[in-house]
Structure formats: C-alpha cells, structure tokens
Image 1 (cartoon, rainbow, N blue to C red):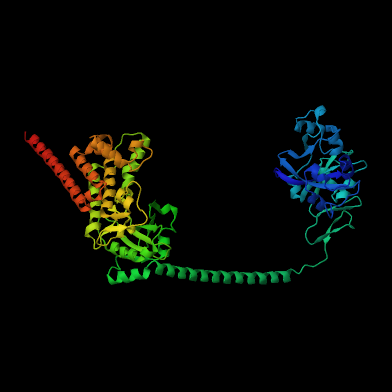
Image 2 (image 1 turned 180 degrees about the vertical axis):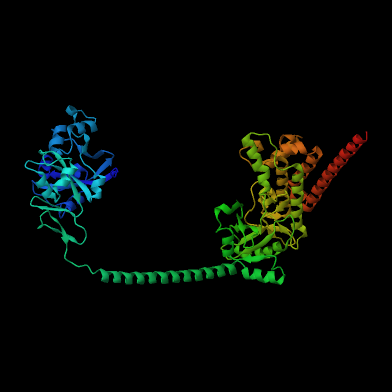
Length: 614
C-alpha cells in the first residue's frame, strides 16, 4: 500500500549552525522562515513557552513540516532568498545542514552554480519521508529526519528519542554491523506516546491522561495519577443533555404555536381586508356558493407545490399564472395578481360574483378565489393547448429558425372559427351579461385554445364592471402596448370600443401571423397596424399575409376580414362597430365558408356519381 500523499514529518536542526549563518542567533523563528514551518508548531513540539523566548546555542530543535509523498518520491520544498557569499554548497552543507544536496538544488532551480545573484529566490528541496504501510501498522506516526553528528551511534540516537535500535535500523535499511557517519541523514520512526528526556533535548507526545516519565529507562508516558470521574461526568452530561433537549423541544413547540397563531391572525386580517366576508355573504345570498369556492392559502400552496417554478404557465401585465391540481384531481390555473386598488375591493368582489356565475363556453370559467394573501389569487379552469399567440407566433418563429417552408399549425378555417368565438364571447360580456364588463386587455396571449382549437377568452379577472354610461375614467393607463386604443391612451377614458380596437389587432395577427410590435423588423414594418393599413391602401396585402392564409383562404374572404379589421382600428371610436356587429359579420363569413365547402363537397359527390354511371 502506498503511503498517503502528505504526512507530517520532523527535521532536526542544530540551532547554532543555522542561526549563526543567518545573523539571527537565538531567535526562535529562524526555522519558520527557512524551513516553511509555523513558529507555534515549533514552540509546541519543543516545549518552548513562547515564540519570543530565546534559545541557547548548541540546542537541537525539532521542526515539524508537511512532507509530500507520491509513490517513492518524498519532498518538502521551501523558498530561500540568496544573500552575500551564498553558494549551493554552503546552502546544502551549512545553512540546511545536509538536509538537501547540491545536485538537488541545481535540479530544482534555473540558476547555475556560479551565477547565483544576491536577492534571487531559490527553492530548497528538503529530504523528508512518510511512514510506510508496515510502519503505520506498528503505530509509527512520524518520521524524524536526523543528521548524525560526531560520536552518534544507533543506540545513543535511540536513547535520545525513546526509540528502539531495531526500528531505526529497519527504517534506514541498516544492520548492526553498519557504521554511521557525521552528516548522514537518518530516519527516526516516532510513535504517539514515545518520549525522550535528555539533557540536550526533550521531545515527547503523550495521550490525554498521561504524563512524561523521565525516570524510566527508554522513557515512556505514564498515567497522570488523577482518576477521572467517568460515571459522574457521564451522569452529569446525560442530565445536561436531557435538560437541553427538553428546552429545545418546548422552545420549538412554543415557536410553532405562536407562529401558527400569528399566521392565522394575518390570514384573517387579509381575508377581511380583501372583502372575504362580503364575498361569502354575496355568494350565499345569490345562491351561487356551489359555483364559486373561496380557497384557503394552504390549499393553493399544496395545489401548486408552493408555486413551484416547474408549475409556471405564463405571466401577463396583471399577474403570474401557475398550473395546479386540486384534491379531487382536477387541473386548474392559479393566477397570483400583482396588485389591487384597496379602494375598489367592493367592486372587485362584485366582479368575482358576476364572473363566477357566467357559464359561457368561450370564456374561461372562474372557479373561485383566495383572499388570505396580500393580493387576491384567482382560480380558473385549465385550458390545455396554450395560447393563440403561441400557435400563430412561436410556431412561425420555430419554422423560420429551421429554415423550412412548413405552414403554420393553425388553418384558415380554425382562424375564422377562433375569431368568431372570441368576438361572440366579448360581445356577450359587453351586452348580454347582467352588468356590462369590459375586458381591457384583449390580446392573442389572453385567448386560450383547447385540444380541438376551440377558443376561450381569459383574464377577465382584471376587467371592470361598468355602469350604464359604459365609460370608465382611469388615472393609470392599463393594457398591453400594441393593443391599446389610441383614443384611450390620450383621454384615459375606456369604452366598449376600446375592446373593439384591441380585437382588431388580434384579427391582423390571425391574417398575418405577425406580432403587433416587433423592433426586429425594418422601421416601416415595426407597427403592424400602420403597415397593414398602408399595404391595404396600395392593394398589396399579399406581401404581409401568413403563408397558410394565402394558400387556403379565398381572396374575397381575406378582403372581408381585412376590411372588418380596419373598421375596428379606426382612430375615431364612434366610427368603430360594436362587438356584437363584429361577431355577426364574422359569423356570416364563417357560414359562407361552410356553405362553399358543402357546395364543393356536393359537386365532388355528383361528379363521382356521374363518372360511375358513365
């Protein structure tokens, strides 16, 4: 088994030789600078009280370093700044006392031996070693790199560090017959708990509960003589632990109790503030409590997985929509509104009641709301196939990116049907509902399609119920740029004809497949309304029509829808048709289209019969 990559090892340094050369005699931090070790580690291992304590000369100092070990290569490198009269030989022989060699210095640095410049920084590769797997199994924790001096023997070195002779011989692959020479590097295997007490040096590691026994031959650790009260401490610790656990449990319970109480009080306050009690009263009085439900905040958090981003469906000018699942398994769309005018709470509650009673097949059903939050949350039925905008814009962009000539996913027949259904739904809200309601944000992204491409108008939650004069004065312009009625933009007065203008823009989208505003187009084509009207006057509508519309629709049908769209887009709102008139004209266009299809089918059948008869 290979030794670990980095282990602690020790170097023995004669303080007098190293520090005399450094002109820093008896300073305890000289090893820190030149051996890359920490002064605190040196003081701890050598039983020195402070890093500022002066050391006597001729004292052997143990320096702990980190030895990098990879396979059979062991090394510790430390930087050194060249001073006057320094040579590689002096560095190896005197400064670092044989812990490195001239060959190692030459191999590690790019300076040639004669060309070392004063102030240059060189890397000093020091000899070190890591314990082998066998040594680690025998309890060896460190290897001490010791430079033998004159008169040293294996026995005296072992006595000095409390290590038996055999382990030193094995560590250095020596036999008892081998001699050692001064400045020969030797590895001394040290164990935790082995000690050395010598007049020249004192080095020992003892475990907790043991002291150094300097009187014993071989020098080992001995018990400190103090019997530790294990049982008493264990019982005391158990009592403290149980007491602390009880405090934590009680604290958590109280925190949860007061937090729940605070949340309940906040929800009740918001419910009252958002007109919750008024809504319950009105739903009960009109007998529609089964139609609209007042959801709790917890119910909607569970339904949307705490409004997880994976449930995100889209975002409009008035809120963010998430997909949710109710406990009965039904899928819903949960809309978190951005804000609501607190002075209009009564009007908002009235709209919720009215919208919950509407059961039009082309209007997204309002299932209920939640009033326990800062702003009301509305819950609608979920429509599966996305928005009209996605089908006429995103699909076209994908085809352009793929550079294919494929047609849009929405056929001309479906486009006419969607226009009829949306016009009928908005006309119903304007004139057929008990209280007229203006949508205020008709656009292709607020028109949803089911799996059969049947349209449903959404986002009536931000609509305004309108008194009999059918106008509404606002201080803040609301809506989507590109769909806004210019007259409303100037006067801040919203009427039913403002919805007509927005619907006219949707008709242009159905005809052209283009967005109302696109700054990526050339300047004269950025505004779809202006560009369409200009081309219509020049009788060049074919240039702007969607490819599928141009292929499938009759010229007279395109002209009829284009003419209707331009009437909806008139700047003078009084000259625009009502939504009911728009709906009737589109229904007429749809019936004529059906009639033509039936005639073509009959002609085809008759031709087949005649052919068979012949």
